[in-house]
Image 1 (tube, rainbow, N blue to C red):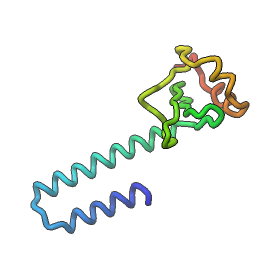
Image 2: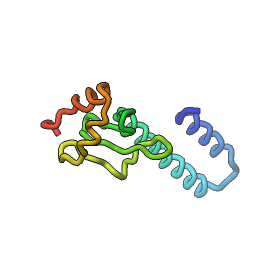
Image 3: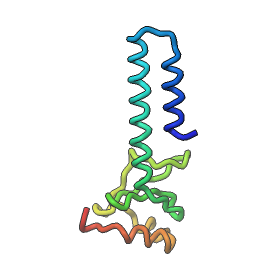
Image 4: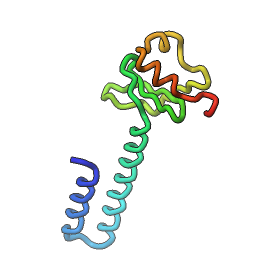
Amino acid sequence: MNTETLIKELLYVLLNLKINSKKFFYLLTFVYICYILILKQTIKMKNLIYLKSVGSYLNQQKGIIYPTLKNNQPDTECPIFLKDDEVSKEWFNSLSSDDMHQVNLVDINRL
């Protein structure tokens, strides 16, 4: 089920609940906030490329590497910046040729 369908179903349920307007407003606000958070995460994920050889995500536009969590999602709490030379030689040496190509597309001077 995609996000849009889920939101529509939640709104349908909310509209059919027999609750007062104050509770309805709180529930609707909660659904809206959840939608915004999901949308922000979806947009953030669209800018990421998975580098399989090193188990990391790369944001080419910002030159940021994110380690992968156990659930295969990027650990956005632990950004590693290419520009600041925070990446180890071992990490670079472990890149496959395809993944190295993706990293080389990052314009460090533009960041």
